Amino acid sequence: MTNHPTSLPGRERPRRLRRTGAIRDLVSETMVGSDNLIMPHFVLPTETGTGEIPSMPGILKNGIKPLLDQVENDLGLGIKTVMLFGTPEEGTKDPVGSPAVDSNGTVPRAVKALKERFGKDLIVMTDVCLCAYTDHGHCGVVNNNGVIENDPSLKHLADMARVHADAGADFVGPSDMMDGRVQAIRDELDARGHNDVGIISYSVKYASAYYGPFRDAADSSPSGGTRESYQMDFRNSREAVREALLDEAEGADILMVKPALAYLDIIKDVKTVTQLPLAAYNVSGEYSAVKAAAERGWLDEARVVRENLIAMRRAGADILITYHAREALKQGWL
Image 1 (cartoon, rainbow, N blue to C red):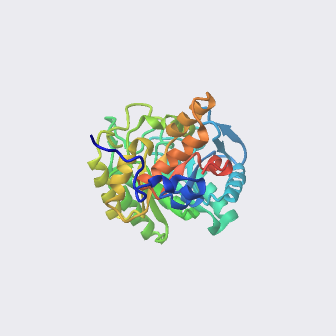
Image 2: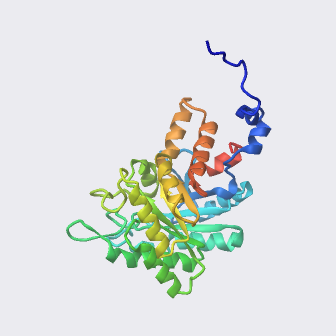
């Protein structure tokens, strides 16, 4: 008969490091704080006014003045970086997304106002994509056969990025998934003297069902077809590494994986092949699913948000773009 010891040897006690909250905090491997967080904002083409987003509780669409007030409050929480998504004037959308390159458009006006008020205290990032500005809702130019044209779209995207840089944006974020757009944008920015404006590239963006609430907020759903011919197939992982490395070679300063929660393995894969900072976008559907469950009392929102954000950081994300940022900091969830 084998004798089983009644206790483990003293040197094999991992629980010693879990005994109290203070000890657990002392030895924690992964942390999330305000420096890691980017707060997205939906901007209306107005000076005043706000709009609710029914599918995204707690998130509003803001005119310029309410945006400034909200950002000021967020700065008080420690949120120093914003990502802007614009809405064009009603009736101005067209096949090539002309409102996206209007220097007096929604996003350029918002960027100028933010930089005038907050200067270097605030990092302003802008989304660069045509979907909210085209009458067909696709992220590039569509030909007569309904095909999203890659190369003809690049000039429009580069012009959009340049307009945002002219307004004072610190980073531009191409999210369209056209091949070669990072190089096109970098070339355009450099040619116009914007060498210091960075590119946070949506390098690995999957064709995902998690974007539904965002498309409601930005009025950017395609009127026909899908985005599967340019956004990535969620069955693929090796392709993610290829896309990330291509964007790095083209001049991206920060890489991104989008969505986040269903793609933690992708975050980890990309992190192992790049020395660039890596962002994860905790997208609208991920946010709204947590909100809906919490409203029904099905889960503890504070604990789930903390667990989700930690998971993204643990997988390798340096930066988290999340609609939870404001509430998580305000409520002390992190």
